Image (cartoon, rainbow, N blue to C red):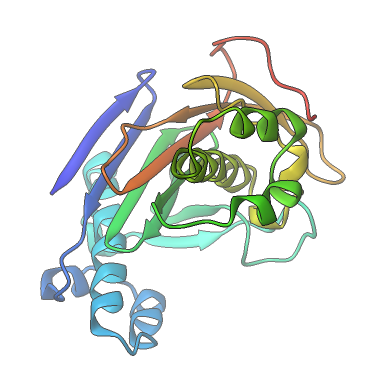
Length: 240
């Protein structure tokens, strides 16, 4: 099953649940680098999920760019923090385009976002038991910790912690720095379903992002972040 959304008229979202068996139609779309990665999976289920997610990205951009999905080639920008090649934001190398993308996977679920001329990040996480107390100091800001502490049950605290995590991952993916960023300084305002947040990468100007939850599933949470530009849901949060 695939779910399609459009946000702000500029952001396209596709999400789905991959089958546990490989679909040869998915494999037929992958480029050599993706096939090499697929070959590293010893677990056939994990390999099938990887192929399904990457094939879904190709089908989305094949539609957007009016080209064959298998002809698309992807690359990686240099990291804006350390400058190293290969682990910054993904981009479409061929055909040349202004469309940006982000892909996330968790268990059988995949999430892909696309935006024309606008940096974007996405994250999806399956719900799972989390030792919230051991992680909050390193990952959450003071105001985020206060938000979790006021929740009535441990289960709800775990769920909301993962919601904060998906938001932070989405922002750091959009910036290109990944989770190496100081997550404890990035406040994603979990009390609000959509918010403006500020995030800086060492040596780079501070950026402002719109961060937004996507419709929740029974066993997963997801969020996206994209350049604020003209969007203005409210005052931007400061690190706390």
